[in-house]
Image (cartoon, rainbow, N blue to C red; front, side, top):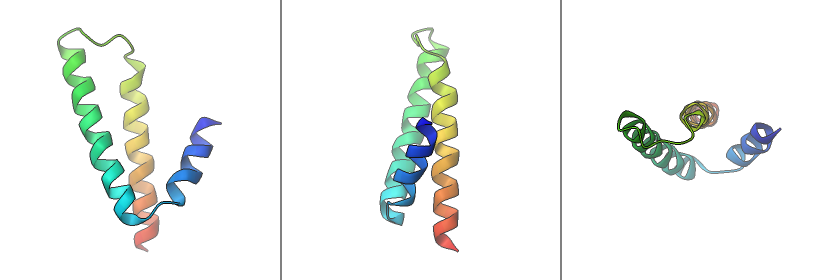
Length: 66
């Protein structure tokens, strides 16, 4: 159910806000991958969650572009 509220939140944002959120999510994913490579990451499931959030943001952006 968390993803449904996240989708509603994304749909209410402007294109600029979505673009900013996409950049921050990609930075977070980079940092998580770096931590995973150096064996510092405790919650590896967070990588999957961030990847899916990036996909959700990109989907919201493409739907607003149409």
